Image 1 (cartoon, rainbow, N blue to C red):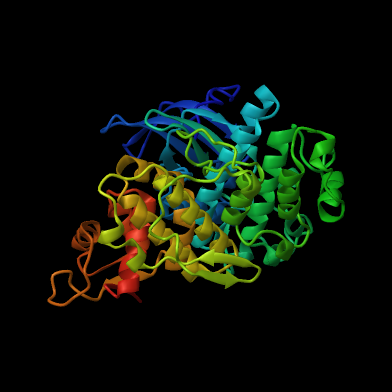
Image 2 (cartoon, helix red, strand yellow):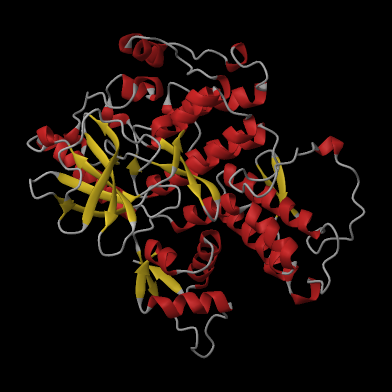
Length: 486
């Protein structure tokens, strides 16, 4: 939680200065609302600065409030992701008030920043949406729907190593798909009206799934670009009525500089019918940064996005022939994409001194992976992504840069291939067994850390490799039969 909204309480809180369970000394009020209070605290033995969220005392006898508070702790503690605030502990005070211990974030919420600056550039919005989509994708893979996504719950944290890091907060009214309906009821309305999906606004909770979060993220993007939400209003019922039945105000009316391509993406994500939206938030994010004209994923802030030239405007290449330039094209619908195989990237084709332009070849193959993924051909997307990374492996720093720039796409493709991250992955073949599958050193290392089995979530926690690299090797070992799922 944040330190940006410190000292909101008008009077000293009764718990200030106390030490919860002999461990957490509450030193300062960071935020206070109807559901409870967030304190800055110190772990008395470790000296670590933390945030402690304490449920309001008058809610400790409210079974639904208690259930939601406990559920937030349980859900977020299992969503170990860099774009989701970390939950470290859960307990009750000596007076019986439940509390959650979280990492302490320094910075400001997106709501505070928009109050301060009014609106953001398209580049900032594209990067922001990409980061939020990564966090939401992790939640959605765990069948968790946030349901209260809004600028106040998107925190722009200051990270000493990575600069600004976007964190999702407050999963207090989130739910697991197909479960926990009893906590809201079929026609309960939960969420913040301006950012609420039509299915939420109409109270049909049973119809709410991950696409409701996509809708809310589109509203946030619209507001960040234009300075207002798609359905402005001062009364709750007025806003709800517009969300349910009115068409959003075209963004060019309030922000003429926004392109029609960007508006087309936002408009689709804001569709009344969830079926008409993008399949998932990753697809929405990819469509947005493509419409904005950026060739590099916005999740990589160290790389300045560049305008992606159209096919018609590309200059003829003087690069030497690529090892995959003569591969036969495979038709998919109205598209034709070339399918590289492992033979096309064998040792004979790998240059000792990478020729200029080879990194652009990696980027082109990743573009084909993105196209296949968008068309729903996961096998082809995995093939493209793996071969692009194989080629990138041969190019040294240039190849690593090209692959790092595509980390968001790689994660989306390989995460989808793995599926449920909670499934147990079992070692089927020893890497040292005679005649067994040939493993890369990174894969053998990962196997050495697994013993006999582990979930994908646990492997990602154990791995010292970047997340997208670990996912790549897990998929490769599943494909080779080294790992199996149960």
